[in-house]
Amino acid sequence: MDVILMILYGIIVLGFLVFIHEGGHYLAARAFGVRVTEFMLGLPGPNIGFTRGGTKFGVTAIPLGGYARICGMEPGGESPHLERVLACVYRRGVANMEDVASELGITDDEAYDALEQLTEWGSIAGPTKKDQFNTYRAPEVKPSAKELAKGVEPYELGQQRIVADPHGFFESERKQQYRSLPFWKRSTIILAGPLVNLLFAILMFVILFSIIGFDVQNTQTGEISHMTVNPLQAVQAGFNYIGAVVSAVIGLFNPATFGDTVSNSTSVMGIAVLAKDYADAGIVMFLQFVAMISVSLGIMNLIPIPPLDGGRFIIEVFQKITKKLVTMRALNYMSTVGMLLFVGLFLVMINQDIQRFIFGNWG
Image 1 (cartoon, rainbow, N blue to C red):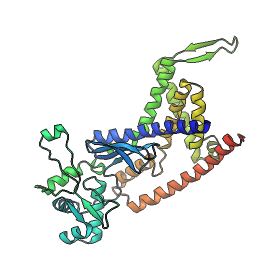
Image 2: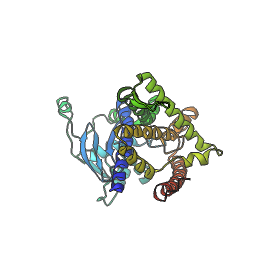
Image 3: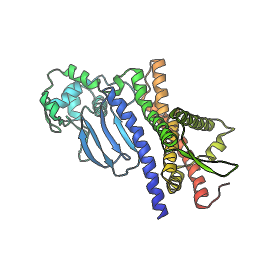
Image 4: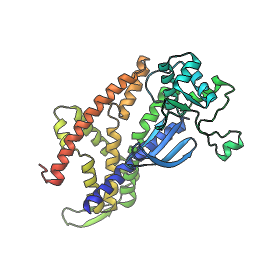
């Protein structure tokens, strides 16, 4: 029973915190007019949900964490054939890669690159598992009552449609992409996730210390008194804790402190165990634990290594300064190296947690 509760509490804590993290990305993207095709509770995979405003909201088969699929975040430059390929797919309704290449007089590779990029943009629907060939379709359009009143027409998936102004239509699609935004807006979208985690933690500190309050024991008399502090002091306490976490994370990059930092860290398993312990101690202690993990999640995501948000931000800064685009190959290489580093750290920490929580070897 304890194991089940540990897993349950771990899923609740991590699922909620990752969900609000992705919610930060989603809200920032939508505020800047960027298309978000999916906002899911859980890891990518089979899902159920509903579509509203062009975004599918739902739950996946593994409800741990969440993700927001923001369009136009693919690395590299734009295919020079996007406008014509988009018009071709809409005109046909359903189009194979070879048909698009033949009609437009471009190579299969050029057609494939353009079609895949338009799929990433959410401008067309990509191949399904049932398709024998690389088949692409004009997307389904389900306008709301307000959109219907404005003359927006509904379309079924793969339905042919005439685009009267291909250039104007392409530009309207491009304006809904992350890559069309200026540097500061792209940076805001990237950093919005960690920022939401930190703001949530600060809010929890205010609730815990200024509204709920905390018990303090007099060391001389042993008397316990209940206290609250003003919101400004609670915010200060929150920033002090954030600073401590930042110092700990910086310790990962210092060979002299790396070992101590890792030994004082914990894995997903440790979070699940601690989540149950804090929940058993009461709602106040549990909320305090959630706030602390939220800070850790926010700060860890700011580490400047792809595929973390900090890594993406550094890439944006690099592209802004050098005026050069990072290629897909380069990003994949950096992301692979980053993932190997994190997998290594995870294996070390999971071994520590097994020793601590299963065998009781805390030393």
